[in-house]
Amino acid sequence: RKEVEQDPGPFNVPEGATVAFNCTYSNSASQSFFWYRQDCRKEPKLLMSVYSSGNEDGRFTAQLNRASQYISLLIRDSKLSDSATYLCVVTLYNQGGKLIFGQGTELSVKP
Amino acid sequence: DADVTQTPRNRITKTGKRIMLECSQTKGHDRMYWYRQDPGLGLRLIYYSFDVKDINKGEISDGYSVSRQAQAKFSLSLESAIPNQTALYFCATSNNMNTEAFFGQGTRLTVV
Image (cartoon, rainbow over all chains, first blue to last red; front, side, top):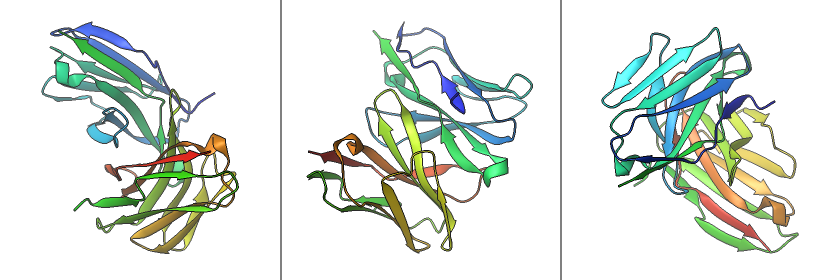
């Protein structure tokens, strides 16, 4: 079983839609959690960190459920510019904090 | 200038050749990583280093080796390249386990 798993999609949604991505992780020693965005085979860039209490940044909301070992990302009012691949990332406390990536979820927002 | 620089950006090499991919960073971070990306598989960890004297294997280290020449430099070598090492390679750095990782622009490697 992969340490971090995501639905690869693609998710095809119209502009203005709300879309949610989920990510599950298998290692209970996971320490920190992030969502990264990757455009068309360019380098990944941090979208947002994920905190235990949940956090919001504009149209983006991230949630963490440690008991069930999953992370979610909600995008409201989707824009064309949100089209990208979204990568779930965890760091493993019991392995010095190395970064482990999910395989990514592709989002395509259509006019 | 980019904070994390990878060279070369693109490379085509022949099966059996030795090739080195280089990564340098100006972030002052101790932690550096090498990943490869293949379609549908996300980023898979090859090697990582938490300081100059620390080198660790990732999930797919076979066929690769690394050298941490200085805090700012982390090189990845393919001793004898094979076609299934054709991929997009990324170098990344981070300050600690709880903070953002910064990536280089990637090296697109093709082994023919």
